[in-house]
View 1 (cartoon, rainbow, N blue to C red):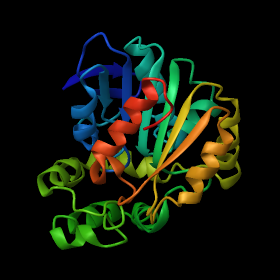
View 2 (view 1 turned 30 degrees about the horizontal axis):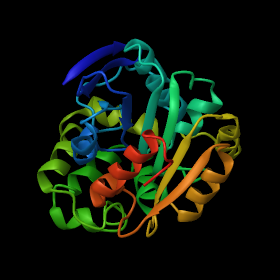
View 3 (view 1 turned 90 degrees about the vertical axis):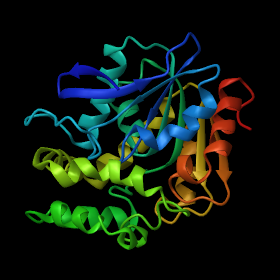
View 4 (view 1 turned 180 degrees about the horizontal axis):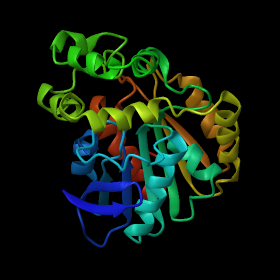
Length: 281
C-alpha cells in the first residue's frame, strides 16, 4: 500500500505502475480496493491500475473528525486524490458507490477522460435496496453499526438479503470479507466515518439533480450492469446509459451487484474492449 495525505486525511492506495493508460477503480461501502483484485489481474498488462481505499468503512486510517464524508464529500475526496497524484485523462471505474453523479454535478470531473459505471447507487437509490436500508437503520442508533457488523463475524449472517446475500451470487471468500470488516470491528473512529457517510445522503431532489447532470458528461462512458441485480435495479443502468451523451450499456449475466466478484473476467474484458476503442466486448 502507498498513501497520500489529503485534506480529509490519509488515503491508502495500490498502484500497479507502468506507462499505460491510467484506470482508477473505486469500491463501495464496507469494502476496500481488494474488490478489484481479479479485474486488476486481468488489466495490469497494458494499463496502470490505481486503486484507492475510500473512507467508506473498509479503510484502515480514520479521517479527520471534521472531514466531510457525505456522498458529495467523498466525491470531492476522489477528485482531490486525482489531483494529488496528478493523474490526467483517467478512466474512472466504479462499483456499488454512486459517486460519479456527484463528481460530474459538482464540476470535479476534469481529470476524467472516460467513465465506466458498474452496478451502483443511482437516482434516489441511496442507500441502496435492503442492505442499504438495513445499514441506514443501524447508523441512526447509537452503537448500531458496532452491533450490525459484529453479527457479520458469523459466516451465515453474511448471506442474508439484508446484509451481503444479494450483493454477490457466490460468497466472497471469508478472508477477503474479514479484511473488509476488520476496521469496523476494531475502530470506533472508522465506525464514526462510516456513520457520517451513511447519514450524509442528501434529499431525493438533489440526488435526481446529480443524475441529470450526467447529460453534461460529453466523453465516452460505459455502463455495465448485472442483469440479475436485486439491489441496484437493472432499469437504472438503462436510464444512466440514456442520460450519458456517449453512453453505452452492456448487461452481465449470472451476477448480482458486485460484478468484480461474480464475473471479474467478463467485466475486465468489457473494460479492456472499451478502452481499446470498440465500445465494449
